[in-house]
Amino acid sequence: MIFPLLAPERADEFQLRVSKARLAMSDAGVDALLVASTVNIFYLTGGVCRGYVYLPVEGEPLFFVIPPAAPSAPVMRAIRKPEQIPGMLEAEGYTLPERVGLEFDDLLYSDVERLRKVFPASEVRDGSTPLRAARLTKTPLEISMMKTDGMKQCAVYSRIDRCYEEDMTDLEFQIEIERVLRKEGCLGYLRVAGSRMEINMGSVIAGPNADAPSPYDFSMGGAGVDPSLPVGASGTIMKPGMTVMVDMNGGFNGYQTDMTRCWYLGDVPELAVRAHECSRAILRDLESFARPGVEIGEMYRRAVRMAEETGLSAYFMGHGHKAGFIGHGVGIQLNEAPVVMERNKSLLQENMTIALEPKFVIPGTGAVGVENTYVVRPGGLENITAFREQLVQLV
Image (tube, rainbow, N blue to C red; front, side, top):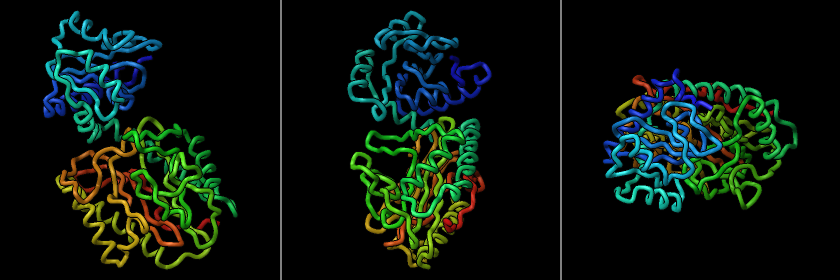
């Protein structure tokens, strides 16, 4: 197969991504990257297969593929093992790098050690950081793909009401939503950064389960249905007086959008309604405030101040257990950089894509709040998951 970004009609996109990576490599003092992780191979080639991308600061990148993949573009070469790469590079006139970058954060220790020996004379440096920096801002094609994700995710959310039946458990409700997602074309898999974070197709959290902490760094936890995956739906029967938070998969093409909406059953306390509206108000404020050059930590502080001014700080980003952030980058992975937290002094950049999720947990009732995915634009944040945000009753 010819990978999309390696195809002639995508040559400009391929070169744009290579240029972004090279700029970050220069800042990191790396002469070449040897890329082996699924996520970064997908970013650089547009597809996934066994192999390695060799990206020098100067000279043509090469994609070394291992059977059953076969070369199908001018920059592709066939190998059986990575130890062949240096000899093939020298045969084609490349000078082996003095400083080679390997993906410390994305590969197993054993993989890093093996690849370190492929270039025994080279100084090995961290290659994950420059690749994350390259992916921090999105190209027009990436944004277009994420907008497609957002439209499909909104189409699914418009049908969530029809998934509900009386006396359902939260898990049964989630399974019905998953069915609609898959029929809409969802790939059914969430790529997340870090080996210690796991999730299935998302989370449906009903009632008091919202106060159950998760070992994962999610804004809302949930106990899950088994100790092997302690997050999300717990098998709770959804009853009047509960809110139901839906935070489900938005991945349809290798990219993702992140989106949360809330429903309720019967009558819920006025406090829950007020907190939900506070979440919406925080988003409206940040949509106009957050633009290129704004310190990311100030976004977090503004949200905290608004929760305090509304008398809701005890419930903001959790009750029994609080998350220390209100948003995160999103793209190929669900939890990319940047993290929107107080100590992040980095500045927003145009074409970053971030999910903002100011949420609240009301004891005994459940979670409320809204999450949208945005593109950072010169005039503020562009919402690419535009769908009704009101707290809606399930009937």
